[in-house]
Length: 279
Length: 175
Image (cartoon, rainbow over all chains, first blue to last red; front, side, top):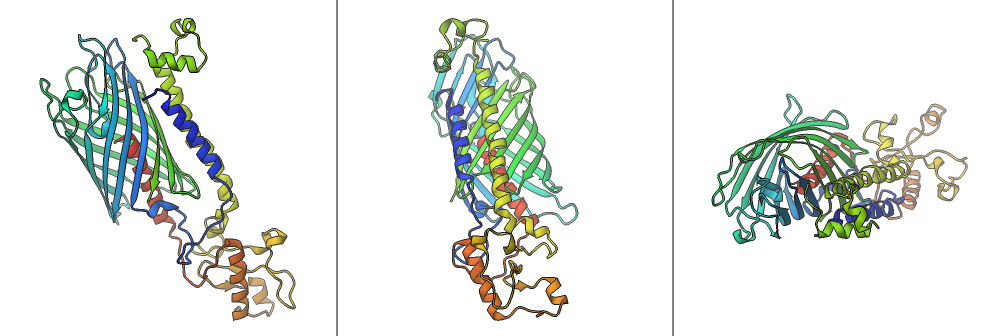
């Protein structure tokens, strides 16, 4: 994947956005009812294609560059959302790096005595489920249970897959205050040990704030922490800013994020852009 | 920091940087490029689109969102026909001057309070309802019935829209 893919997608997003936000009167649906102010949010199927990039030294003397094309889908059944994703990854590093759950980099050792290698190909398939419990009458908070499993569908010879299944289960609690929604989440991750390595299971947590603009655009700022996955890398700490905006008069949504690592366990910089369509 | 790879060289060529400049102390590192690309993407989605959306919201969503805060209550939206351009003004009813007609989302026509207080009809006639229904059709560009009650639950809609965006963010960030 070309490094400037994100830039091209960014320009595409700008063009889409400025072209599509024309004056569009509220169009009634075929049934005669007025449109939902939340736009196409009631669709059950969401397909997403995005590009993400992680770059950093992870405490080593050489840099690890990771790029991924992410193909994902989400299907909503009531308060249950099912997700599936498969990444196409390109990892350039002299360390030991695999494709983790949902294509996130699984850094085991950022540097080894081997020379810098580049491997690319499809990573493992990740299946997930998220259940949004009804708002509790006592606190009015949204409680969501999230679970994922990464299946070893990719070839071990590609150097991208651990060849083992990974699991994660967690919960996120959020409570809206007008357009502001603070949230906190905690996830326990269990990794299958690849040949010759012993990975550490542990928690990954996130806390942040979501701001909703005009009932459509969503900004999110979060602090992410994850326990180390091996003895050769410290805990991961990073801050991330994300934004997601629907393109008016269409079923397309543009989403972008940028992240800055705060520790050697996280990428110095990470960023991504995705287009998703509701069907 | 490792030496820039060939793709970074391609990026430098695209940006018009010579090999000498590229390999010098001002070398364009991958991290910098990634940071700027990501920042540009977030800026585009987070600033350009909201600006356009705000314009769209002011022009259009006043029929739905902004009008909810008016005196008619949270579940009604007024269509202030008198504020429309002359070409979109409703046909004047016989024997009346230009007046404000309010069509609520509930499909009923509410007479202005000052008319009721000054001895006008307290309830609209069927002819008025039909007239204003036709007027609303002109605004929406599609034939529609205004008899169906459409409530706009603000809190629940916010939650649904937010969750939709969160799902998109999660699919991208792979959280």
